[in-house]
Length: 369
Image 1 (cartoon, one colour):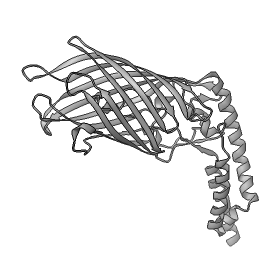
Image 2 (cartoon, helix red, strand yellow; image 1 turned 90 degrees about the vertical axis):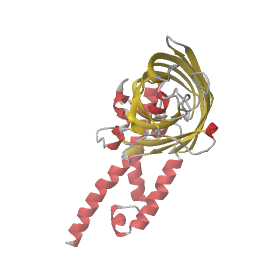
Image 3 (cartoon, one colour; image 1 turned 30 degrees about the horizontal axis):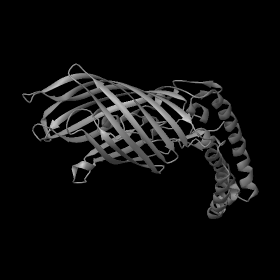
């Protein structure tokens, strides 16, 4: 009976072991700026597109000119796709390939939803405006360089063969299924040593690295809506803003490790703005069109960029001219900052510092087959 029990456990252990060894961890997740921040022009950058968003993220921004140093602007964003397991998703499908065929619209399903809370001052009355916004974004279209498909298929095949060989290596080094049951600590010690050696031997041609490659050309779409309240009084709720915009990104890869890019962005946005005041102090709605661009240099953990956006409407034209930077402290933590001129006349200095913090759901894995 004991022998039969051991055999059953070994068989179950084999299934579990191989289930753990036939996947690759996705490491290209980013922590983007919330559309709610962008809608209200309270972001370090109004022009960006993430390669792929983390399951959940929290953003905190503080205007350095306010003096009290305590952050007043917060945003949360989550990607529903990563809160569910996708048994049929493999590495090729994740990146947008069905076998050898490229699926240009495959990333639409990874849309993210966000909410933001932003406090500002009414320039006429000095009262506090509590802005609450919601938004969503997704990648509508993306295309990779012609050479990428061959590189991806080779890396996928090599990873598949490596994973098969890994199981044999573990057994050869003594990490058998019986040892896993009888001496879990010893098994874990051997497994950790082998997996660490495999991880250290990976290079720019590994599947995990290839999956971090940015599309050559990508088009994102986003929408956001906000209401505002005066001095925290719910009865004063008014329409704030509605924005719909699209961002086009051309990413030029500068090295084999996929850590350095020269990015060119173009953005077009329709904005309905209800935050304007007339001479009598009444709020009124104004429609505008924004057009602009951004140049950004990514160097591993650090990126620096400059963006210019022209805002046009029937009353007046204005612009935003901002330099911004981002530093990747860890996989889940980014430091962001910006300095420059915002839209409008008066009180238009941008001097921001913030952090973006992301969390993975644990489902950010793809099968290798």
